[in-house]
Image (cartoon, rainbow, N blue to C red; front, side, top):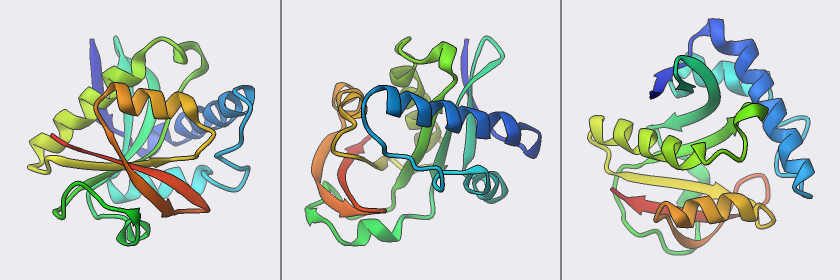
Length: 165
């Protein structure tokens, strides 16, 4: 059974470790999207405190971490391209999985859980960004029917995707 649950402060250290494992996975793929400075434990702490931090669980075991923010993203106000809709949206940031779950296809299940959360909150629109070299995430996004909309500036140039649910 797969679940997406709000992260609590008791999850902080494990979520920080998951982010670190995601950072290492990126390096193993040959690129650096996440630096040592961002995201970090403070990023996760702020997510949890604001209610945007979530953990993915597989059979009750924490498998991943993500921020799903319903307050918008100022960096998305300017896009070289065009968003698919002009309406309230959820933002996906900092998606990462524990090493033992990486490469298992869990990302598709995670996106389905996130989309269910968005629909439950009556926000049927999602935006997300990723680095140009992060071809794995680009593939996952496109496989899950996210549409590439252009380029935004968020700690450098990023590819911007969205999906109407």
